[in-house]
Length: 246
Image 1 (cartoon, helix red, strand yellow):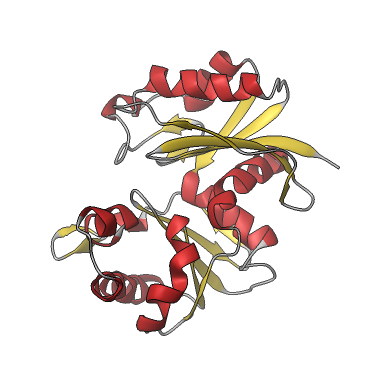
Image 2 (cartoon, one colour):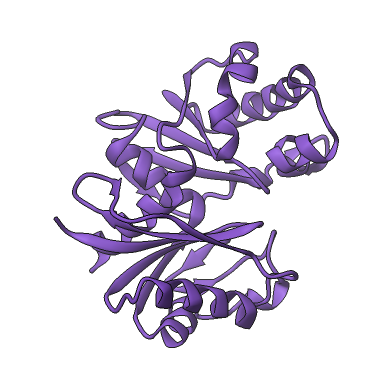
């Protein structure tokens, strides 16, 4: 059994667990610490360090991060502090945690897990994995291969970022009924399909566990299904990503 530490940095919480990268199963309990207010680099790195220390872990760790990460450097900051832009996140997290941390976009991490062990397993063609949470994350796979850092949560709907209208955070903030939320999500997915024409759409994020409330109200050209790994996808995918890169 090959186990690596997976870390999932979200808008509200930073989570970690040991993962069996051969099966995608958790090999430890999941630990969570709230994301520090302001989501600044040093504060978030300190939390990651605390989590790594709590596992007494010294190996290679994978980390799903809520931004575009190119060659280890943060390029965007939609739901984190703007001072993250230009930071070598791999180096920062590695220095603080005293282990080697390899970072990937959080939606790409979740998508990697779903494609390896979940709803996207053995799926060919174009698969779009959409994570609905604090924002909208997106991961696109073509015949099982990731196209990294596609920020399709920021396409414009009525002149605004799609995630300001159709994220789960927006649903909760506005106390939208499932019917009203489904209408907003439908609008987003219609625009998405016009751009990329996927064969399969997988809906992930914490809201995927409530898929029966809104997916029956959605009509898409592609088949649309809920993710299988739910909130574990980010942790599992981060660990698998690190394993593949190491």
